[in-house]
Image 1 (cartoon, rainbow, N blue to C red):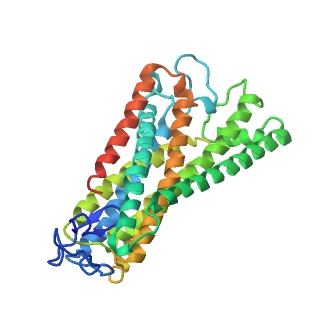
Image 2: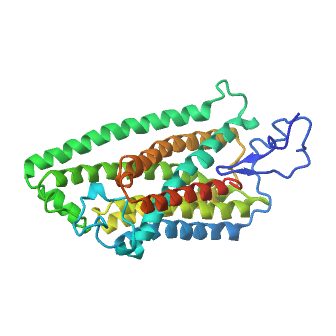
Image 3: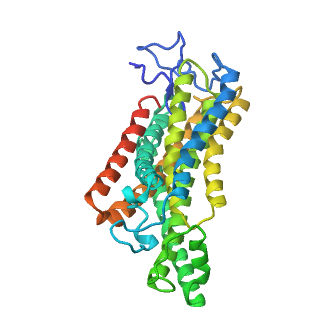
Length: 374
């Protein structure tokens, strides 16, 4: 038996079914029936493909810029319950309430909504499609059937090692600066460049040193997160640019929403880095904004030679998706723990926790629903 699930052309995001008289719900399911290695350009609409570059560019840019802009306009940190300032490392996830202003509340919701987006992307969009790619008949028989989760596990462990040693280097650098400069003037200048809160008690002291270490670690974690997100985005664009068929428009719509949501997730985490310059924050956002449109342009250029159902492309996409899933899973759950289990929300007021949890769940649901079509 060969069911219709097996007779499809896989893409980086979903399954574009091949309309061919050779493919039926039952009977032989040969490589020829699956169009393995064939370049499929049915109903290829060049104007729409070119428009897709700019459509995805706008959706990605809007997604990543909303939390960045909201962070620039929000009020300085305070605990919401007293008039005193709160050290940076204690108040990056609980800045919510009427006294904080609209932009601070938008940022708060976007931050935790984004965490849900990242987790769902890793499980529903990347890890699952790693399974899909490796199970495609055009790949052939795999001796080790758990290839996708094995690659994801390896990627998560490598990410852990990068994070572990990177954090050690960051903490040693912060400690060395503290010993050499005494009052941490260089670090203070960096932190104050974005109006980051430094308490009088922490000025040149314990809180300030912790803030410096926290800043270094957060820089590293956001770099890992962006790497995981960007890593698979180029292939998403190539697949969209080279693809065609009746399901292509639906795929474009799904990718537009996916890029917007993923942009929100990344932008919210970049916005946490309040000590970096606005230029650097914009450059980090621009890297995400441009990568998928660049991939679409590449896909358009190679459309006559790129086979979405070729063995090489299936293996490439499967490996990239699995690696990205591992990176995002490690990073997402570490961010989740840093906000809730080990962060300020652990002792925050119940209403703040409820809003954060609700935003997280909405993010999980939103990206999971997109998985129906992607």
